[in-house]
Amino acid sequence: RDIGKALFGHSRLLTLVITSFILYGFATYCAVWSLQPYWKSRGLDYTFFGYLWAGNCVLVAIISRYADRIEEKIGPFKVVILIGLMPIIGYLGMGFTGGIFGLFFTLAFPVCRGLNQVIFQDAINSRVPAEMRATVNSIGTLGMRALFILFGPLIGSALDRGGPDHAMRILGASYVIIFLLVTLPVLGQRKQFRVD
Image 1 (cartoon, rainbow, N blue to C red):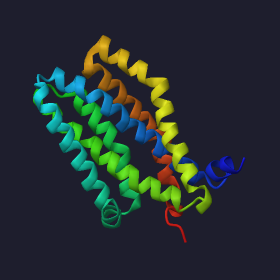
Image 2: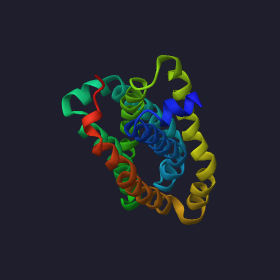
Image 3: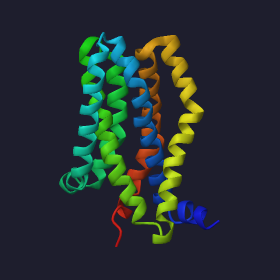
Image 4: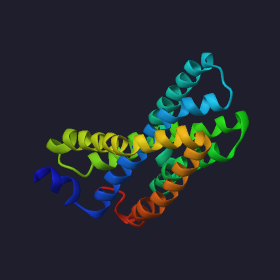
């Protein structure tokens, strides 16, 4: 009861932020499992996969390190828009861009992950009681993985049956809907972004 109240009884903004944290974590989690089939479809040799993963992880680290500065520079309103647009740009760019050029759109996911892990998590931590923070963060991570348990097989089926381009387009369209239903309402709560 206390956890439910801390998560969903505090404010509409906190509920939306937790939902966003889970959904955009799920977006990058799906990308992690989809990138290797995508790279293979673009004719990349397996010997490059390790270098691509390393580059992906380095970019996540850099974005995470400077996420607070990015938020200070462009403001919380624009950083939420940026987080919301990255999966759309990434998935649709990958799905509609042929050849090796589609790889550039995969960079959207480490940007989304690095910002999401800092910006939304900080927004959650600043709005829940100290004794609840570890539990709330664990529930957020659990929510992301629970979504993958539910939808991972469907995404895998889309990858196997329609190919990576088809699966990326479906995911991209899904995140357009998520942007409209979740991210825009977060932006509508912008007056509450800062905690006094």
